[in-house]
Image 1 (cartoon, rainbow, N blue to C red):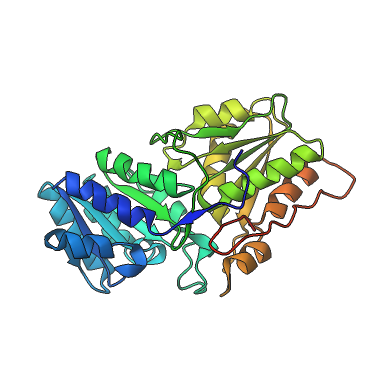
Image 2 (image 1 turned 90 degrees about the horizontal axis):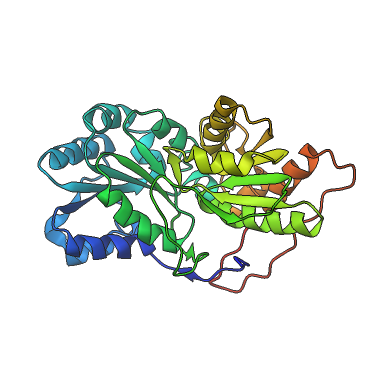
Amino acid sequence: MFDPPYPTVLKPYGQALLALARERKEIVCLGGDLTRQTETDFFRDLIPERFFNAGMAEANMIGIAGGLARAGHIVFVNTFGVFCTRRCYDQIAMSIAYPNLNVKIVGFMPGLSSPGGPSHQAIEDVALMRALPNMTVVEPADAVEIGQMVSAIADHPGPVYLRLKRGETPVIFGDDHALKLGKAQVLLRKLGGEVTVVAAGMMIPAALAAARTLGEAGVAATVVNSPTIKPLDAETILAAARGARIVVTAENHTIVGGLGSAVAEAIAEAGVSALLCRVGIADRFAESGSREFLFARYGLSTQSIINAAWNALGRTASAPRAPAIETPEGAYAPV
């Protein structure tokens, strides 16, 4: 179950948004000169009367989105994650979050999925968006969840930040997978498990692979997928954390203010005694490079999750090694 490598599809978000917009005339699409790169070329070509290119002026684009939302539209704003969070944070706070408007901000190339270095790597976007009142923050793990998430956030009144991988997107889940906004999902459950891994987005494949390797080494691990980071489904995560000795969070984001921080807050407030280990970017900027290079170099690999759990358990033997996965062209596997 959930074994890599995974098949991939191209532009699942763009296809889902187009299909939904054809059904719902109130949906409009805004872009910032990154139409093809944000999968909105389908929308531009087939529903041009509801597509608006605001150019490389993201702060202005947010203001336009607020005006369209006040006029009764459901507005999808699309650009790279760094540009729609870091660059226009005050405009989001004052023009979208404060008036609680129906704007869905879609940020592509999260964390170290971008080869473009610090100027293009959104490593703090979740922390920024989590801090805003009224803002919902979501990060689907695969193409199936992306398709379901587009409909879910369109139905949700108020602002949403949607974090998306760009390019070929893995298909991890089957057609029976049901995403619900605000809910986490236990993907693998091991009774009496010593370790619970809570992950989101691009870290789900690594979390699943790590749990498999730990299990083969005699360490039972449960995996929780948290596609909604705010509001966090504390109930599901705490239920999986109680009884475990170790909780490991895994995120393609700085460990400051993201999923790991949200889980830490939840388990601390509930008095859960499990030791927390955060796997993510260790409060530093990265560099240019491929996903494989960057994830391995900055501690986002399958082996990083294994090591965190193994060391926290106090095992004296060397940690088990994550197996190399042969990945055919066009397929996707964790680093």
